[in-house]
Image (cartoon, rainbow, N blue to C red):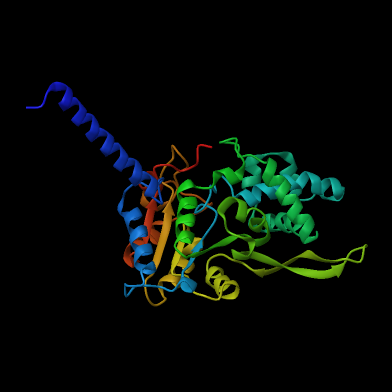
Length: 339
């Protein structure tokens, strides 16, 4: 019979071993911010199935293409897209350069600061605003302006830079995929040039792997004789809805085997991905955590929204097609990094 001291030592050793095992498992977990749900299991199993050369589901590394929508999929998109906020913030400087705009809509409404009136601006007026703030300057000047704004602008709710509002689980997923030979791309309805400014520092995705809404540019020479590109108010690619697979074909040249989105604007990208041969993975992020982030749909009875709409019809299509619906509330243990 063990003495009380020997028994205590045995129990202590057992606890140490259990702690060591738990610690080792945590350190080996490539997706620590994901809860241990069927969603996480599906992701891990898909990666294992496509990267094990001994399995019939193996996919060569050059074909391991994963595409991600940005707004609402990789970072916060509510209450308004970050790029739209950038455009609104640019209006005072634009009007200072062109005073004749101060009494012209939509610039007059934006200068008023009336958020309700700004939110009601029709699409045609918003397009004028976007054209005025996103074109008419050189590519280098635009990149510098965006970089300056990104470095200083902060979200009004979290009081943090917008780049700090990238979802921690998705950042882990991007790294996990790259560590397993996947090439990760952003395929966004947002401006291609805008996202390229911060994509590498925020997501580890270089600018050449960003596919977005793009306008034309004009080649010319500056006063110093050096060549430059000027951004024109002419749309080349609307990288939303059907434009996403069109942009993937144009810019990537390979059909993805994994695709992630969160709204109706991503439907065709997921459909296009699933239509290919071999293993396929399609997923939609459902914003169902109003406490830690936002709750909107209107799928599953969530509040309706004009920003990142996820209707019940899309949810039903996901269920019928076997797509994964990622629940922020249930699948993510952490949403935003605490740092």
